[in-house]
Amino acid sequence: MAFSSGGGSGPMADINVTPLVDVMLVLLIIFMVTAPTLSYPIDIDLPQKSLNPPPQTKEPPPPISLRIDASGQVYWNEAAQPVSALQNLMEVEVQRDPTNQPQLEIDTSPDADYGILAKVLASAKNAGMIKIGFVQKQG
Image (cartoon, rainbow, N blue to C red; front, side, top):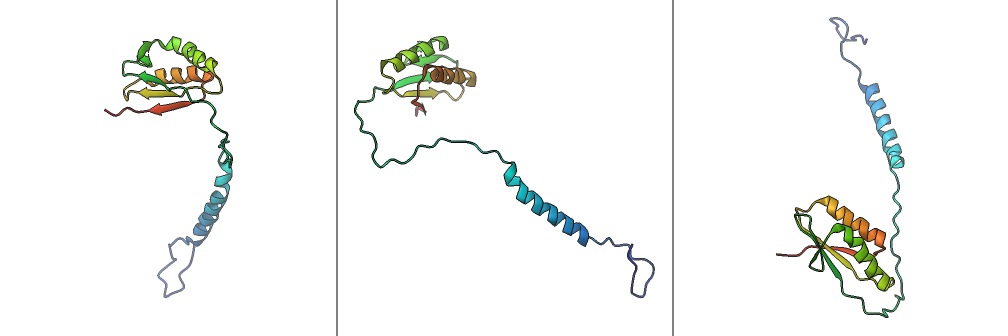
């Protein structure tokens, strides 16, 4: 406890906060230094810049339109298909020319079940499709 040096009416009851502030600043600096080391790196395989792009020898096939409506029905080029048949359809498209695959354009309704979309994406991955895009129709 600190004692009053002035004309005193008893001991001074104020707490000295300077050591507390010093300790808090040291802890803040320690956390600021160690926080970046606690993050986990994510490996991303980015495409590299090429001065000589490979020549486009083949005309790309027309894209495949895959639509998922709010009720969960899947349409492959405007023809209704069960989700279980999608992987076979995708494998047929991939086997036609694995180096020149058509792009799979997926259009989902905002009210569609995410589970259906997850099954469609899993089917595309298992079939070996590499060109997958998401589109949103206006209207």
